[in-house]
Image (cartoon, rainbow, N blue to C red; front, side):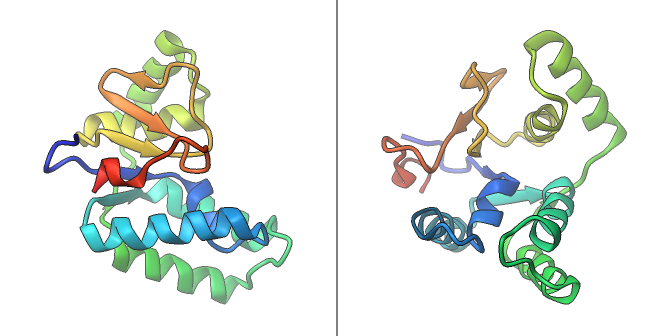
Length: 151
């Protein structure tokens, strides 16, 4: 059972897979984005928007044009609250690296969630410790993932 006000942070890889050629992952990512938007539970960060733009316009097999990337960024900003990346988030991320062994960019996600009281992260990049200081990580592409636990 989830807390009635618990929010779910959507990592970059979920947004990217919504536009990727991998049909199975695309379906999962699209459903996740739509349902978290409708439930008003989903959140993202400025970091995720920047990473999405970079990946979608440079690394996808069917790369987006800069204009298409910009349009997707605008869409995500309409769908989800966007959390800021602050100096405090960077400092907390550095603590996450030092104390929990998290890779820095993943620690930025963790720190953003921790400092904004976001309980859950959906990401393909689940750390070895699936919960760190009150922030739990879930892989939405794994067989045992249940979206209903967040809604």
